[in-house]
Amino acid sequence: MKLLIINIQQLVNVRKESKVLRGKELAELPIVENAYLIIENGLISEYGLMKDLSIDLHTTKVFDADGQFVLPTWCDSHTHLVFAKSRENEFVDKIKGFSYQEIAARGGGILNSAKAVQESSEESLFNDAWKRLHELIQLGTGAIEIKSGYGLTTDTELKMLRVIRRLKEKSPIPVRSTFLGAHTFPAAFVNDHQGYMDLIIHEMLPMIAKENLADYIDVFCEEGFFSIDETTTICNAGIKYGLQPKIHANQFSSGGVTVGVNVNAISVDHLETMDDNEIKILSESNTIGTLLPTAAFFLRMPFQPARKLVEAGCSVALASDYNPGTSPSGNMNLVVSMSCIQMKMLPEEAINAATINGAYAMGLGNIAGSITVGKNANLIFTKPIPSLAYLAYAFGTDLIDKVMINGNFINK
Image (tube, rainbow, N blue to C red; front, top):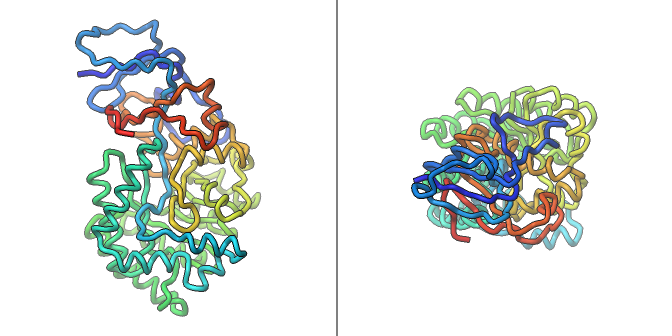
């Protein structure tokens, strides 16, 4: 039976055809006021103005939105959802004045999480991640990317990727998997970078490809982590196994964006440290710049130059960077608010970046991110709000009344 949703005050991000949005296009957010929406078999099948609605209500299940705003669920294209322990002790160290790099040099940071994951069973990692994923769905996330990278050994990276595969199989929302073995150098390889790269290229990648465990390959291209040349080598190795790159780029220093564009990365993520040259390079490419404002917030770093990127014509997405060390929240509602408040994005720009461009930043633009016939009926129903801008304005307030996944309301 069809599901007919009536009396929608505003149906948001309605597009006959969807594509990656660039520059000024991000400010264009098509809306149908006083709308209806029809869902069949978990997919969007029709929408329009209430005054034009013509359907036999006796053969259709009806839900009255009664003045609610309805928009596509958030598409979070950068997370580290699979981890074993929180790191609030490092949070306190940051308050005391230790830098991210200083904490990492003392065995904290990524190495801390890696040790905990290495000591955890696949079952416990899965159970914890499944709980987190369900919480994010309740917050309005309807598609997500999840990275490995807290393994740093062959066995543990494979363990993480198998957990992500199980999440894919069980999850009601689309899940994309990214191999991030090049997250940092394990302690045993601090002075033997080539040895660890050989392990990634000649041992990890063949086994990942054999089990079809990843959609993408990622590298933390940064001073003190993986150099430009090392990043290029690892990305090219992943490409040979059919893994398109995503890059942790320009968080603390420049260079990663250029590498990402050169290897045809689907996205370059972070971008706190950008100069005019790399903004130009990104704007002239097909690579999406994914901004992670909650990471900048948590680390007390300057926020990403969103206005410069948009005005230069770049494709921009927003994501949570949910991880235990530098962004311990996957709340995309907060990401959208913070992007408007701290990066001066218009609400329309932020919503587009967190929906349709986020979907394309993980290869899901054909099924998620907009109200388009044939796409998944993954939808957010708001509580009563005076305007769409109120979503970003009223930060910290839970404005989601219901979340629908594949045409079914979930328990909230």
